[in-house]
Amino acid sequence: MPEEVLTITFIIPSYLRVHARGQSQVEISISATTLAEALAALWLAFPGLRDRVLDEQGQVRQHVNIFVGDDNIRDCGGLAARVSDGCEIMIVPNIAGG
Amino acid sequence: METSSVIKPKDGSAILMVGTVKGAFLLTADAARQRWQLSGPHFPGHVVYALAYDGRVGRRRIWFSSAHYAFGATLRASDDFGRTWTNPESHPVKFPEDTGAALKQIWQITPGPDSQPDTIYCGVEPAALFVSRDAGTSWSLVRPLWDHPHRPKWNPGNGGMCMHTVLPHPTDPKRMLIAVSAAGVYRTDDGGATWTANNKGLRADFQPEKYPEFGQCVHKVDRHPARPERYYLQNHGGLYRSDNSGASWKDIGKGVPSDFGFAMVAHPHDPDTAYIFPLEQEMRCGPDGKVRVYRTKNAGRSWEPLTKGLPQKSTYETVLRDGMAADSLHPAGIYFGTRSGKLYASANEGNSWQLIADGLPAITCVKAVGIGEQRSAKTAARRIAVKRAPVKKAALRARPKK
Image (tube, rainbow over all chains, first blue to last red; front, top):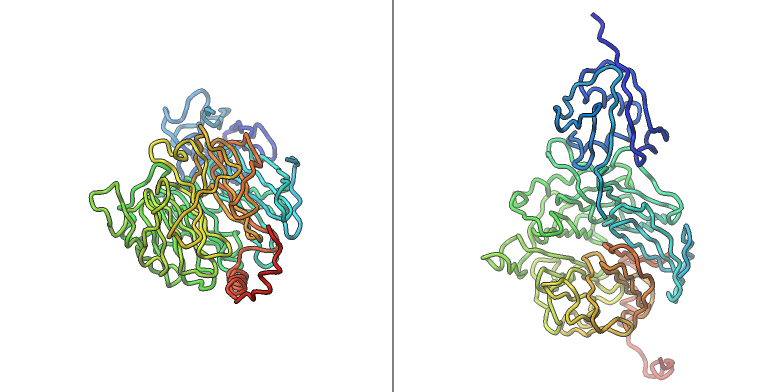
């Protein structure tokens, strides 16, 4: 049985758009069930994003938040969070002080 | 102060590279170093702990580390004095997966000796040394130091577990000294294959054992390029000199208002001269509300305060470990930047000072160089030979009065 192809929209923060050809949103069609698989497709399309979102051990950087839909992935399985067709994945830096 | 989008130094000019907690600034002035041109902030909002100038084999390359609070630390370079900067897709300095470590900050960027013009080093946090052999394109971890049996016992200082000093020998590529807070000084004589703790005589007031093999909180070390066996060291409490490549250290802290401080700068041409910025321990500010650089001209046997042009009343300034620098011109320019964003310059070896920039973000790092006159061992050795040559009385009489 062929795997389902999902269409996922990534929301790119302004600081990282230089590594996404200036785009604020990126739509990718992939076969994926987890956030890690979806992000792997994003890194393939835009390699400059990876090291800025993940550290060299593959962990989401401490002050980067990723939301799948309305859910912060830290509350729903981290990189193993489930993704679905039509979902939005938002990458956003923490709010910073002075 | 002239502000522009890019500085345009000429041969014989001085360049100042200033890192702050919110970006980098570049300044230039002609050899008189009285009128400065400033560009920046470069990469506003980024913390810049390290800057370096690589003038080897005709390059005019400025390196700097930029750390974004969310998106990590990377290395950037400019070959046109800041008009354009590299922005590599992949962060060039990365820990291998098997180490389990992740880069927090790049604390030091140091070009290798002239005989290895494509070698460049980075000292980082967590404390480790990286090397590039292809002029900064690719980097690798120096494994023998990372795997050193002492490393698991190193403890971080308040600034983090950082390698803040990287001093390659100017002529022997197999030799290098590094320093880590709070681990102390380590040295290799075989190109990095083995490393030995070089902390004999260095005090560790904060430990039960005052003179341990390692664990000292060394704040900064500098060396003279033409007398590479001589080092000056600012400790967390204590000023030291070594005349045997770090094998042992002699206390030279008499005659200063405090032997605590962060910065230590060796004079670019005279091995007997060095500069410090003493701080009192509680506030980490210049003692007595005064801004004073101290200079020794006799290798630490005595120190003199340098205050002309500096505030001497109710002023509380802090200079961090990389916040002071010397250029390579004649006479040497000495510079320091404060956590309150003031940048001071002396064009006459510290005898008098000028505030050349105010209102910058907190300054973490100041590096200086003379364009076309980079501080090389060969040049410095020639200058020392000239200095030590006998001077005829007639020549002395002919010298103009200052």
